[in-house]
Length: 400
Image 1 (tube, rainbow, N blue to C red):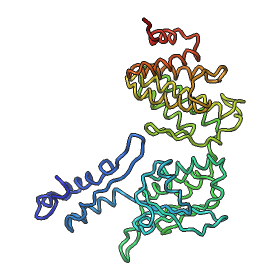
Image 2 (image 1 turned 30 degrees about the vertical axis):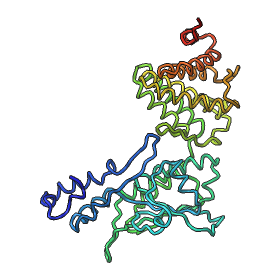
Image 3 (image 1 turned 90 degrees about the horizontal axis):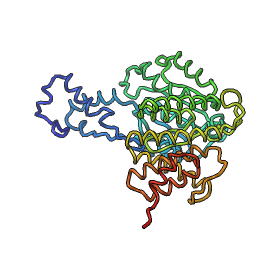
Image 4 (image 1 turned 45 degrees about the vertical axis):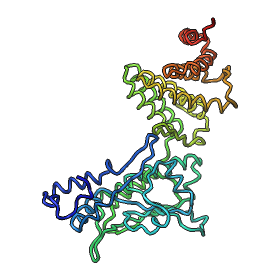
């Protein structure tokens, strides 16, 4: 039934209210309104024509909408904050600018500023949905790590919780379950200049606030712990790969990336906290090694195995994409597009595997010329590999 057809006289209103609520819930649910692209970006597309049908349908459907969606307004003195949050943090923005500045139907205001360096410029606001707050705080977490823990000590965070729908003369209602969704994401935001929570004192959960504050005081996981977790998850991915469970292998490899603060969303990778890993590691399985070097080696090994997993799945285009992205980055890093094997490079064997497996993907896709180019480079990195040499022969140009 089209939304536009719900106008009186209508058989729709003759349905039991429970059935009507199920229909509203379907039309307004996140599954219906949220559109996510292959690269992980999402947007909400609300069809509010339902609210304009008639008074009864307006009131019934609005009640369901408010039950499904709660909003947060975020304001900062930095004009680039919204773009950073949306592009790097994958946070779907509901509205921004003047519309956000005058938005009143939020359950929490997130106010971020720098009391040591007060801004005189305009405040910049944007609105997101409560369920997307973990994306916002995750991006904040990575930003602080990327600044070597020198960002948050200058920031003041104030959270103001409210019931935007409290009737005139009525009491606000802010369930503890909603407070948990509002506050828990901020548990990973650490070492702030100050942090305050305001709102109806009789409604706010003191124990929940205490838990959040305690979590905020816990130190970040060390580079050693992050890299050991990444290595462990890579091993789980290898186990799945060896068992033929290639989807599970890819899932574990992506989790391994995340453990060392590299976020994989579809075909996009966001590499966070480089400065955090620029340290000599102490203790554990990587004792005495440089954190940046260990991380780079793990990244290269993960890509080599992800390319192999996609080849095993018969998804040559995904294998080609993952392989060529790393090859392109590697070419850029060594200063050009001419592929010459770097003798003595600490990850030469893994780089060779990426060239070889990407060559197989190109061959599968019908690009024999591209495959030939890559397999010849792979042979330089893996000079003693019989399988690679056989593939060089199969792809060689035939004369005569």
